[in-house]
Length: 325
Ligand code: NAD
Image (spheres, rainbow, N blue to C red):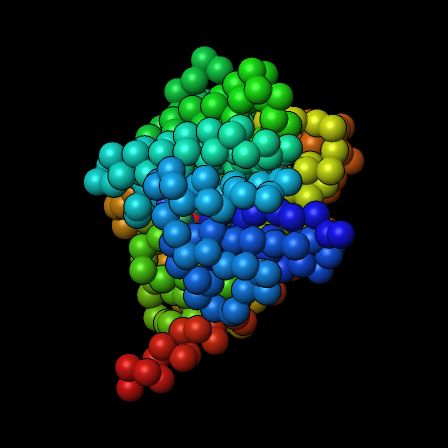
């Protein structure tokens, strides 16, 4: 009989891709999310629309489940996380989900939980130099994340690891670094840089101007969602708990990312850098540990990942323009 797994947040971007992967591998999959997937129907065997901040919902959805992938979180791009306006909601909602789920899993005898943490939990002071950020796993402490979103991730990493030590639930913790790809949020304020840039380039005429937050010299690395899901599965099947980075080491400045998108789109637009929330100056995944423990490397480089993503976003932009006109 196929193994029964629960994907919390399976109605979202990464969770949605992970559900497809798990189904293709033969798992029986239940999803719990506040909403259905926006862009394509979920192949899940059961889709529970429910709020995981409610302990009763958590107790219901873990019934009969052997393993959990916990990706549900109140999150968004820089416009949501770094303005400070949503700090209380981000901390309350995400911490409550994780507290409820850990306890419900203990009570139900769930064997293993994967938890999706974030590179946002790394100390701000190690990410001030855009050319030389430090994000190796052991650099997490002394802790000093630059956002409440990062603090909550750090708390929940520790929560699951404590449940492992005290209650014997197996735990796998990954720190995702900027995941992107088709069927991700591309508009509305919660989208991340690659999606926002693809949208801006797609929506602007040749020779037009796009506005980018910050001086454009801030650096990041971006990992295609297919690579992310492969690494999650590899980690889950391994005997390594983590926390471990899942990201790309191909660091790029935001202005150069915009130029790469233009190149893929075959279009030139002018970049205007404007003040706005940007987060840390530099961030790059350090894959030394995941290479050593799991032998994992991403299969797509940034250009290849964007080549798979830009056409999807350009299609969404075109559809939206059709609706408006
Ligand atoms: P997403 O917003 O698309 O998915 C999160 C899902 O959680 C959403 O579908 C949302 O409806 C659901 N959710 C939120 N609150 C809920 C609740 N109370 N009850 C039930 N469901 C709830 O985000 P994503 O990009 O797919 O991210 C998945 C996970 O990976 C998150 O935990 C996020 O913090 C983490 N992460 C993502 C990135 C990235 O670049 N996308 C980077 C680092 C970490």
